[in-house]
Image: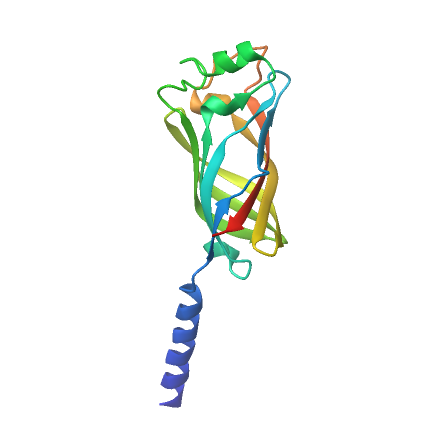
Length: 176
């Protein structure tokens, strides 16, 4: 009988920990989403989203982020306008780039955030590395990864514009 009581006690404790709520955050000012290639390079200036995160159980984290396609800034007004055309991001039809996590894994002191990246109406699974730092009611995620333009039919194959775009990001989030 004691074995059953101990078993149910452990089951209750482990279930309670799994169901423990994570802290809710919103993307805060100071974020950056930069992309770099031989040509073009630039950034997106508008981002929004919600993050659920608890440093004690990062595997339960959730990320739901959006980037405003119209906020692209390549440093060249003509390139910014071209990026909105149907050939590139088709900003009128697809005004947002979205990322929604499906799994978060701890790798040493960092995370690997796997999720659905949706660009121009196409969704692909990407795993994005992230270092994490926390200071009071603010947590910051940052990292670098590559995105293939052809995965999302952004632009045409070209010798001038490479397929792989290096994306670097810093996403600070404040507790709600």
